[in-house]
Length: 257
Image (spheres, one colour):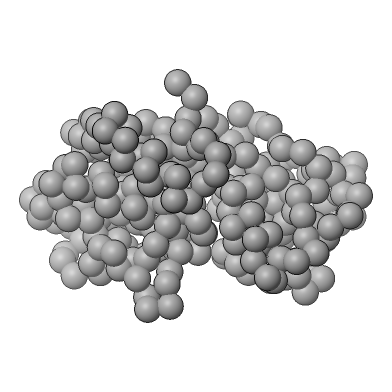
């Protein structure tokens, strides 16, 4: 498929190191509920946000949430705008070529969404000639362009899932392809999502989607990666991860061991 002012807005120089400031600056695109979203008052909420805050507590650091468009996350990380990406970033071989990742945070399936009763299936044959919306820069765009677009499917990228769903509702798209949980929370469970449903089954492609999502890190930040992984292990052991996950999901999203 992973979308604050629970932490503070960035006010320090972006070139200061993580260890020197006592802060841990996470890049986030808060347009992807239930993983990350913005409340009416401007504060951030969501599973990734609470997970990040729990990691900061373990590390005795202050979380600073830096908002950034999802498709520019990796370049912003490399440009030292923030220390790490915590925004439902799938672990893929392509991304591992340019950045490092923490241990896996969670793993959720990919699904196609269309009008209820639609005969569409997540296959190139079924979608030929159709317009399919995806979030720009996501693994869902990668999959759609690789597997469907060469077979006559029009893949339409959007800056956020909200914009994708809006055009689906308005009839400008035939279907949307996204993380199943994000589609459920952002569309299907909302009043505006009445009349829409998953179309076909779960799409599996480990070579595209990877083992799940992780925290994106610069390749040289090995000490930070080690500390984040240790903190992640502790919140699994002490029950914090499970407690947070239960607030947002009615099924187990933890990665397989």
